[in-house]
Length: 305
Image (cartoon, rainbow, N blue to C red; front, top):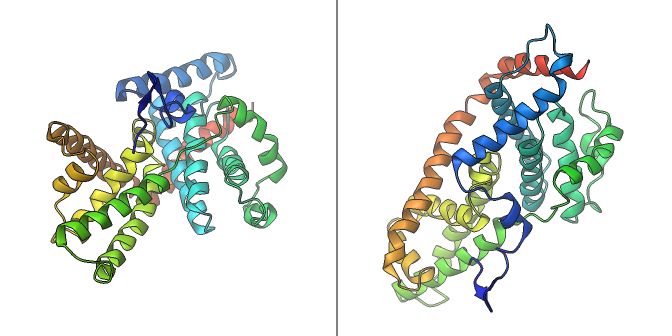
């Protein structure tokens, strides 16, 4: 499902900008990049900040996740297709990996990322932006579009986002074939299990969007890794009685090479642990509106200078 080497060179998708420019090798590296972004922005404007209560680095990271969550809710409420949702969330988090909230208002950037995603995922013919954004209080739609070239430049025009949908389809088909082989059933008898697998895939779509809210998952794991971890997360609940996760992975993704099984299962489990931890963190947002407003007020004073 991942790329292979051909004639000594990496092939798709490892030679994509998604892999080469936006995957980070460790939590420490990710934290260093985010801290450098914050400190560089602070250095540029600190002469303006006399007598102002400047948001801390920790407050900034919390608010980025809060607005990523708000963007996710907005995308879900407006029933945009999955690729648009994942692209918009990816752009938003990539933007604030390289730029600080000290420089740009997340309430504007989140909608610019949305309009870009709608265009790039070829949904612009069916979405009326005025209708999509017109009901949002105090939003200047003209400024949303004015920010598009700035967002593109910050992203180095790396506008291709790889999604979890394609690997998920491959995983779904592999799981179905594995069930047919292991249970020795034909196409006519597989219908019940097919419905379960389709249900799992629908759950995975929702979980994948939540994963895209979290930089620790988005920047440290490939879409294939996220999709597979996600699928197995739901498989254990829905297909535990008929599928052996270990055997499924060994046969369908490792070619029977059991030396790779334990490291892969450990990596996938680590993704799901991160996901559970993030969801526990995320679940508190609905009770922390006042905290978000308090931190945002500090930024608004800076934007007003």
